[in-house]
Length: 88
Length: 308
Image 1 (spheres, chains in turn brown, green):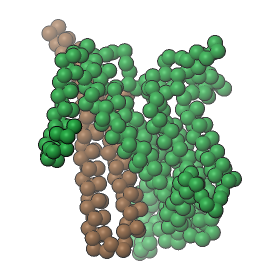
Image 2 (cartoon, chains in turn purple, yellow):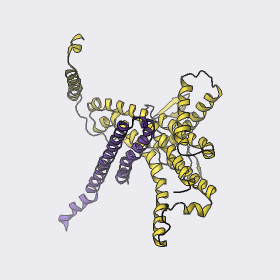
Image 3 (cartoon, chains in turn yellow, cyan):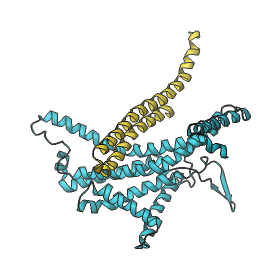
Image 4 (cartoon, chains in turn yellow, blue):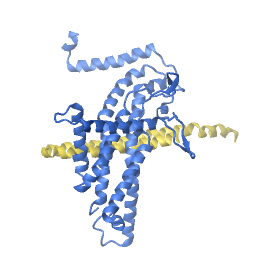
């Protein structure tokens, strides 16, 4: 049992910190991938639609920013939950 | 510098990149690593020390940086709009033109497309105020100021706390308070227009008349959850955007160099910080105010709409 004690101490502090850092990094990173794909799709589709119907440009513009902000926020949700995991 | 203009574009780009990286290596040789810095805590930017401690009945109501920025944003909103409306001229100057563009945006794009007629007239002041308040709050949050508020400034024998960079909207309480106001007001507007039970029945999407009560109950439960999720999504969207922007600016504008004790890395990150400052000021600050107010008007419009 004495041999296992140092391992137990490592489990207590070091691995917890490592796990928190991984949670923040992986969470924010994976969230950014999803939001990145989503933002790409939004702008790609908008370019496509404007190319087909240039007279719709003004109407599409406000919808585009709405979609952009809603998608972008997803990345920040993961980031905030990562920060919660890191600091709590 | 005539030899620069003779180079091709490709060579110019490569030269600039080489200079950028070369300077980093030179700085790295001049200022070697000083070890990790344990004193500097980056989260201190968001620390709120009580400037004027007030405590009433166990509730902490101290005046701190967040309160100060909140008051500053409200005062700016009121002052700018009242000042412009008092001295309106038929030949507008630059400030009036800018405010008129923002007014037009809130009235036609944000309120006009989502609410109609009498309702738009009724809710326009509220939604426009939300837009301007959030916008001013975001923009004064990006004034490049020091992050550390430990030091005090001595003016005439009184120690004033150092004025640091902060945004009222980078603290979850303020977006959450705004969201609660929006949340209750759209429910109240829906109940006032349709009556309590008709409003609740209106949450069910149309086309479910033939469904059995259990299925209807399940869909109703999902709708209830979605209304509560709006509380989180609306507030966290604004808060997280501004917080992430501030953290990014903090780390890129020198925080990383101080934390790692590696002065040379500041040369690499500072241009990035400048680019992000332009991005945050030019796009994110306005976009988040726009999104918050347009979602408010979409929610109010959805609450009073005949079909869900």
